[in-house]
Image 1 (cartoon, rainbow, N blue to C red):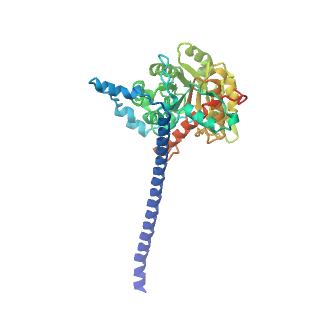
Image 2: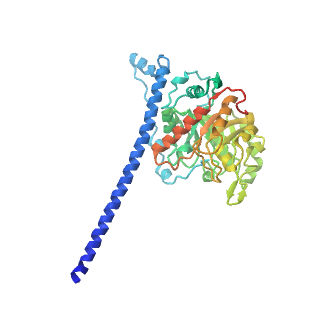
Image 3: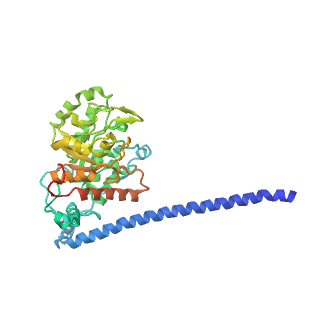
Length: 423
């Protein structure tokens, strides 16, 4: 009996070790599956890019690209082609305290041209695996029954940009890199707690290095940016305007004041008109939403969360905010009319939370709104301001942003059908 009693502890220890080994094997197997899934997703994105690029090359005229020929000509003359100068390490990565203390930004053009841009063949647009708007529009038109095909197609001059908030928890530098790699026309800089987003010189270096224009500046109007660029809300707007002018952006996005900012709210409408009259930069006031908790609703913004109740010169419409406010996006578009200067494109499902879903994943009329913009010849900017915080990693985040860009380019080119739409 004593011998058996002495044998029991070693048996239990062996059983415990065996169980731990099995669990370790299971964890390793699960990790291997995740890695394999990410590799498959990356291969799919790369495969799509190669196929689309091959199609565009076969369809493009056999003319040489002046941007590609320039280095060869320079070498023929005995010179060397210019190389991009990489931004400094602090610009590309952000400071260590900033990386440790990041907070979540809201999930809520092309530099102002000095001369008219030169037209370029739509098929030769250098997008990474994403067809140009004209190519997408023609593909969709060919998919219609012969009796419904129309010509010409309506493709507006609107630029499609990426909000730097869309790559969170990655930083501002990562947004420039991703926008350039995916083929966005530019970025909208969300000025928040990332020091790079507040530094005009750092932003200019990033724009030049990646070849990505800064199309708009989002003033620091969020709860988490109350101390960014000081605490005076008017000084924040003055600095946002100065940043836009120096960076070549054509728009400053601004939120209505919080209700507790009483003096600022009282003078807001008149003050925005005065500031807009002092610059060519457009101050586009964005629609917000009432705050909700259970069955209670709080009016957190003044004069109103809906800017169309006031007389502003320019508006920004945000479809995720429309969803949270549980109002009609197309009706708001009608109220904004010709004063609509800027679009924050995202989806929502009507939740009390500001979701900023990838377009097409919610219930908002994203496609219809884009088609109406195309038919009306919208000349502002369409900015993808989406939430990718739940992405498993950079590969999945990049795939989400590529999907958002493809959706936008597809629907921002409408067929001119009689009676198709209200705008």
